[in-house]
Amino acid sequence: MLQLGEDDVAAHEVHVLERDGVVLGWHRVTFHDDGAELEDLWLEPALIGKGLGRLLFDHAAELARGHGSRVLEWDAEPFARGFYEAMGGVEIGRTPSAAEPGRTLPRMRLELG
Image (tube, rainbow, N blue to C red; front, side, top):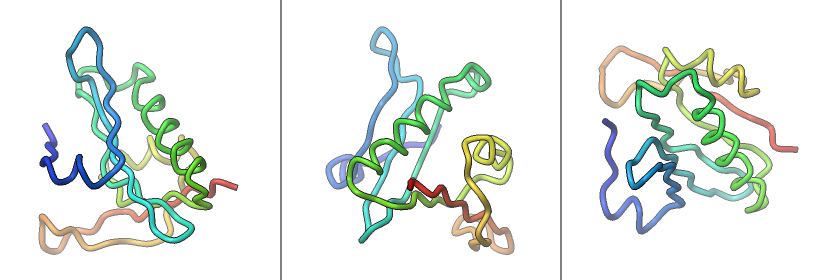
């Protein structure tokens, strides 16, 4: 499970999806000039394909719009690229992985219009 530190929660917009006190997923968004960055979007793996990822992503995009952001950008896990494309994201480049030398991640963007 991807984890956040107390500093991440204190400094950024973090929203949790939970049911009966159990965390199902969450997202973290940061804001920069007229854009926003989807820093993290995590969903319990057993719940993938049930519409909850879309719920989290749509919430992150609406949050960015509400803060006046014109674009939402993020570095995607390569296996999640299809999901993000289904959400309307387009690949705008590649970002070197900080965790795995030689690996790159799709850099994605959603125009918030």
